[in-house]
Image (cartoon, rainbow, N blue to C red; front, side, top):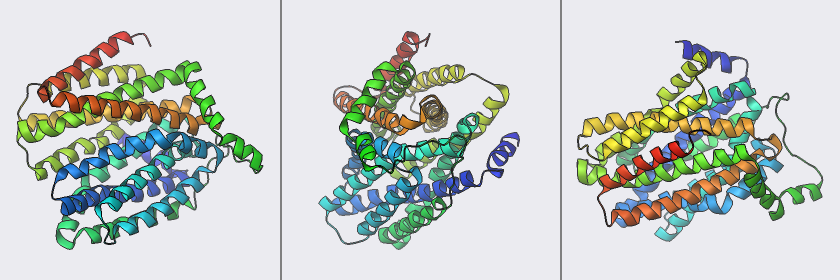
Length: 403
């Protein structure tokens, strides 16, 4: 109840943040529909689930290629305008999915959608810092995480039922409706003047200078010189690498060891993502009792190591589902803390670019991890990979115990 009161208090006198949350709700529902729609479309056309794995690598590839540009755009232009423009393009791309198109074009559209998500990510994260006071950013991120968890707990099931009843084109139409609807609240968002600073220079020469490759290289230089930013990127990339490895290993583990069906696996995913709801409540409890972020990081890493170790020998579906719920909470806590650190530690004028650099390095690590895990799965049992990741997280914590 206390957490609910704090959520209401945080939003009551901030209509722009409420409008941002409404935008997030509508766009997230659209994303949840898109995820199921694309998988169903690919399986219908190819008859195999292997084709759907393209989506796993499309976003990291797009991120490596375009996160830097997304960061530059986020620092040069009005964040609200960037999100608005890209969401309009996404609506156009979704409408193309509704046409009778071939497999190659579908892959191209999937990659374009990933590129658009990458380009808008730094602007979304930076915009939050203009809507909330610095001391409320952590709470704001936890609310957003809770909303995402609730949506991905419910709406993928609704999307699946819609596809089975009315067909995939109808589900795409619903996705299009939510994307277009999400654009409307953006028009009425007004960032707080007291703490919102952005580079919007009417001088074309200045904009060209900020958008130049040289500017991006200078941000990379900042990565090596700014110790705080460097530490954030190292922790963020490390957790991205391990979670990518665990996620890739979980597919053969679930289907081959636990023997689950596709429907049951969907329930497991809902449990995993639904745990974000608990994270929102936890952060308000944490803020009430002033628990340090270092303690939260330590406990979360320790629990992840224990969970992955237990995956290495468990074959009980119900125990694994319970552990998945706990794993989802830990990963959500870590992700929200890292995002908040970036939003509160970095200077506003270069924040979007530095977020872009962080995402480039994160996704490069994720691709490398996925490649190594795929090769390992061909030679060793999946349980041993869980054990390896469990040991790696302990080693990382020991090495970085003072930082």
